Length: 155
Length: 394
Picture 1 (cartoon, rainbow over the protein chains, first blue to last red):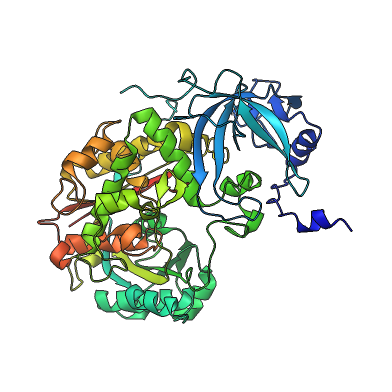
Picture 2 (cartoon, one colour):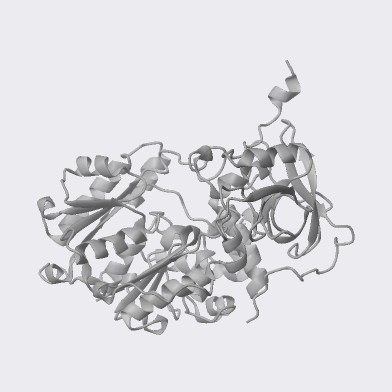
């Protein structure tokens, strides 16, 4: 009996549809793969049976660069989940491949606005053993504005 | 989404149907009872109570109902059984789509007089909108997909949306407080509102964060209740005791691209869907935002309101903060919005109570909070990217 395992707070289980399993195996292997459409180049997240752009079923699992840009962030001040005692952050990241992922930013955390910060993926093992792709700031992007990739609408 | 064809619903729907009866349960009394540990009734019971009130308000008997639409929280067949009717047409839909479906059904002759019935025991049944059992565990996508990273609750989705919205459109986060303050101003004059104590902008700013940047007052309440409406043909509506409230126009555009990844919430803020929905509704009505006397917005979170002000053309894109600050949406403001208090302050009936508030404002039944000479009321929701509008008129 592994006491630490049974006492570790349970991380909410990933939704495991038919097309999610390959992705979660790649995460456990330490190199996130997503489906790339071989017809039009669209990168799918979450995984799906067809390309939502051209409906092609010719989708190829390929590792992503792991680089991206913060689109938004929040800080939870209420605890909903035992694996996530408040406060903790959640970020939305646009990967360089185009797909948008929800994740967490590991310290060091930036001061001021996080939107537009360049981040790179790391792999974090939760106390119950689930491995999650998370992000850290790209070196040299922990200060100052970096807004080139954000969605500013000019009005 | 520039490839959308500029198509619109048939103008035959314009003023084809009218609301002739409205009713609701006593959610103020039930709020106290539930907090005292009682369970006044279940979702079907709340719906049935509201249905009875709507029949009384319309002045008709149950056997005159030949169509039924039930809300998403009750099963169609069971609700029909509980209230004892055998319709010749039926459906299940959320608040705004129930009204739109009723209009198309009566216009097409599928039914003549339709009851729209909603009941929800969400508070006493301890329904979870965040946490491990949110929305039935892993049965739904959207935010449940991201729960391994701790993203849970609808509020967190709107917190993410709001942060990106502030950055993209230059909205000052503190200006969001005007929504909660204004709606409490309205609810303070509404005897049917659960939360009636006025709040100030300072109290808003001092309230605790739930999911930062959103604060306690940005969140709707969770309470029990039921709402019902009776919708019939314009022709038949003219023969009822109370003045009919016509459904002048409807519009809809869904934005489902990238829904689970949250992309439309974080980069477009549903603007393109709202603008297309608005175009359809204003075209059918033959008038637009400048002619609206009352604006009603689905407000599970205050964030919906600035998005709707910009999306439906009540102010320029990027100007919602200034509009809230300088023109106002509360009592005495330029655009009376959520005049019953909305989900934040009146009752969280998932858009249903907003429909009866439109009807009552247009009938002139709102007492202290009545908007003078109310001729047109615009209700809109953008829940999960489904931008739907209903314009009601006298």
